[in-house]
Structures are given as structure tokens and as C-alpha cells.
Amino acid sequence: MRYLATLFASMISISNASAFELRNGDLIFQQACSGEAVGNAIKNVTESAGDYQFTHVGIVYIPDGKDSIFVIEATIPEVRVVSLKEYLFKKSGDGCYPISVAGRVKQAYQHCISAALQEALKLVGKSYDYGFALNNNKYYCSELIYDIFLKANQGDPVFELNKMTFKQKDSDQTDSNWIRYFSEKGLAIPEGEWGINPGAMSRSKVIDLLGQIQYSATRRGSSNTICGLLTDSLGRCVHYASEKDIVANKCFVCKKYYACYQCHNLCENHPLRPWPVHLNDSSQKIVLCGNCFQEISYQAYSRDYVCPLCHKEFNPKCSLHKELYFRFER
Ligand SMILES: [Zn+2]
Ligand SMILES: [Zn+2]
Ligand SMILES: [Zn+2]
Image (tube, protein in one colour):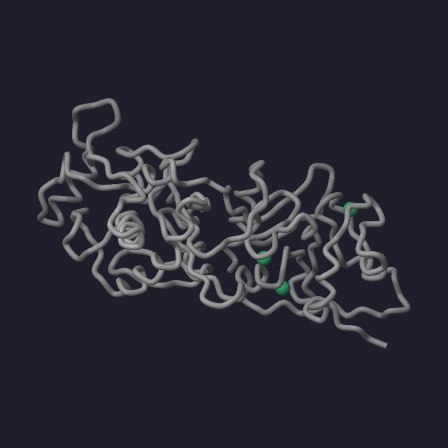
């Protein structure tokens, strides 16, 4: 997990996206790092939402409660279910991790999600579709998502297909990476065939992009950092993103502030160790307010569940699991 340190350093730019929690059926679009060959080839011939260049997509699957978030993806060699951790922290090209951006199908299609996930689970183990063909019992990433929503919506497509092209943008030349790719596989280039790529899916009118999953939040003028799978600059995360979920807690082992214990346990190689608190000693500052980025003591935090420095309200429900973060000593 040493690589995470590099990751944190390289992904500090905070999007102004608003906070969101990951839900069942959310899509996570990924943009591979620049050193990744197939990723580069995809970027050369597809268009994504915003300034992104997506190369992959998977669907969030949360079987029971937020303690276990999985992603179902069609990847090499087959369709599989992986933990969120494995999905986000897969190494790409030059040893970095992909950029991950969450999207949500619009309200009108939310009723499809449970059936779509059931369809996805039935396809686990199906081979990866190197030839990007529809209806051949093999799947590539965005085809899997297209297909499960199609089935869940009684055969009426939720996403639109496009005619695939492997030509460089604004050119009549087939991209040299794709020529090599298809010749290595012994397959004809499916130029002009119907398909759907992750970039096109991200631009679909049935998708709202929620924002990028960031790995740290910092604030100008503060030396403090909040770590986690963050969805905004106040330290809210994919697990807890209500208005008041702006408190970060410190782990006694790594001494880092994390948005929540699940984020910590996904990003570190040890479980979060609660910080020892002496109730008659309020000199230790071990809670970080995500609004003002200042540190406060347990006593100051728990007095009214309001930041004593910036007066922003905290979530009082966090006290229900305070033992996860604090060990109370006499
Ligand atoms: Zn730790
Ligand atoms: Zn979290
Ligand atoms: Zn504050």
C-alpha cells in the first residue's frame, strides 16, 4: 500500500462535485493511466463526458449494507465480482491507479437496477469479448452494462448503441494500436458495427455523472489531510455523505485522518485502531473538522456535535459507533 502515498500526492486536485454516497447500480467509469496500451487505443477513438477519457466501466453491487461494496465488471479474462478496493486500486499502465468517476442512472430507470444486477450476477464467469461483438455470449465492459439494463427493461434499450469506429478522431486512418490489437487476436476490425464504449455510455442522457472519487482532501493554509474514498472537499466519502458527515478521525496506528473506518480499511493494510482518550484530558486534538480543517479534542467534538471553531454541525449519530474511533481510558 506504499503506492497510495504517491497516489494521494498526485490526486490532490479536488473537484467541485457535490458529495454522494455510492448506491447499488451506480456505474464507476475509469480512465486508465497514460502508459496503458489498450487504454490509449480506446482514448484515441472514443469520446467521454467532460475532459475525461474513459477506458472502462463497472456496476456497483451492495448486497447487504454499506460494509461491503462490490463492483461487477466485464474484464480480461471474464466477467467477475470484485471488492471496491480491488476495482479502484487496480494497477494500470505505468503503475498508477485509474481515475474513477461515479455515475447514476436517472430516476426514470432506477426501477431497473435490482433486475439488472441479478442479470449481471448470472453472467459472472462469461468470457471477455476481445472482438467487441454483440450477442456472442461474451462481454466487454460497457456491453455488459448495456445488456443487463436491456434485459432488466424488458428488451427496451436503456442505453443507445453507436456504430463503432477504430479510426483516429477526425481522420480516415485506422488507429495503429487497433490494427495491431485485432491482428494479434486474429479478428477482423468491426468498423461500423453496432456497439457501445464507456465514453459514449458516460455521455448517455440516462446517466448523471456524480463526480470523481478522490483519495485525499487538503485545504490551502492547513497542513491537515483527510484520506479516504472522498466525494467532496469536506471529507465526505462513498460511505457517508450527508450534510453533517464532515468529521474525520485519526487512526492510532498510521496517525492519518480518514473520512470513515471503512475508507481507512480499504486504503490501508491494517484495521483502524481507535485512539486512546482520557476523559479528564482534553489537550489531545484527534478529530478533524472537514469544514474548517482544524483539529479539535474528543471533548470539544462530543460536547454538542458542533464544531467549536467554525460552528458547523456534525452528525450526532456518529456517536453510536464511537468505539470504532475512540478507546476510552480511565
Ligand atoms: Zn491506520
Ligand atoms: Zn468512507
Ligand atoms: Zn470546523
